[in-house]
Image (cartoon, rainbow over all chains, first blue to last red; front, top):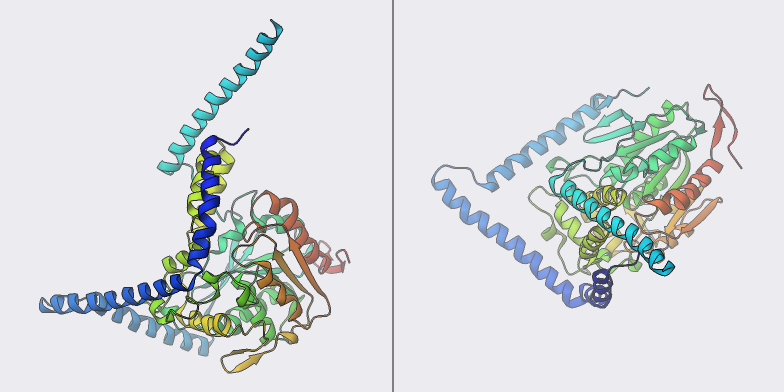
Length: 98
Length: 373
């Protein structure tokens, strides 16, 4: 079966574009851009959470930050339970394999 | 006259072929869009042997275990383990079972807030040693062949270097990064050291799966488009569609990278390149790779675009084993264990080495003689 015309055209275009894109994503300028995007995303998340928390707390509603804090507390407890289980030798569950 | 007849004969089947292909394309597209008869993954029957926290040790069922020691598969911290057992007929596990190996897999589960504090040491000094002990005990203390894939190979190396007295009979690492300076830029560091790792960690304390996936996408920015083109071109092929569904699902199915282990990875490997310098300090102690003295196999994929050969090759010279083999295979990162070439060439080559470093057992499971040395 011969390669369809559209596929040959795609491969030609991809062959021309891909190396340049790969070069661009490997560049220092792209790393700067990624760093800026990561900072911005992190900042936006923090600021949005702060603003929405103030508003939600006005109505006595929990904000995402409160939920995250709770989840971290539960996770902390789970880790402590794991350590205790380990210390008492009750941490492992044997399965069904012969 | 005869020429016309010949030509008609040629046209008729080709028209029928064309209609047939069109119908199959239509049906496969419907199947794909509606999710009918989706590729099933990880279907080889297995039993849960042990669990600790979210980690599970599986043993694959087999009635033809004729080789010892058992093989323990260790996979990466950011991908799903079903890559080892993708589909019936396209499964690394299935082929090892057919060869007579007793196959175990350690699965990390999906990390959440509870795993955010997991360091690399959590895996190399806790989970893996425990799993190795259980496998070794279950098989009458014959030792274990530890087999690490990609980042799982790093975990296997760190474990072996830090636990020289453990019952490791053989160590195999496959497509494992050693020299991070030779990694593609997207894998080499967090933006070449420009991105603060803390900016990549989310509120769970882990690097989210979507971030992990996008870092792989950066390696081949047009990769998704090329995959869609492959899909469209081969839509008439039922077998292709099944494999396409399985592979695209796996390649998009990452798991979060536990935050503490991620920070260590950035610091130890991406910034300090400590593995290739044999200067890995983990949780307060130095792990000397030359203390690994068991038979060692380093599998290198010659067309690997994620962990290219120059990044993998230096590992061969790091270990202190006398019995060291470097196996270069004409495959990509995943093509080592998935696909027709893996079935025909890569997996048999790896299995040959493991078999040569195993014992054949009799019906009672007693080791009788080296398999093929």
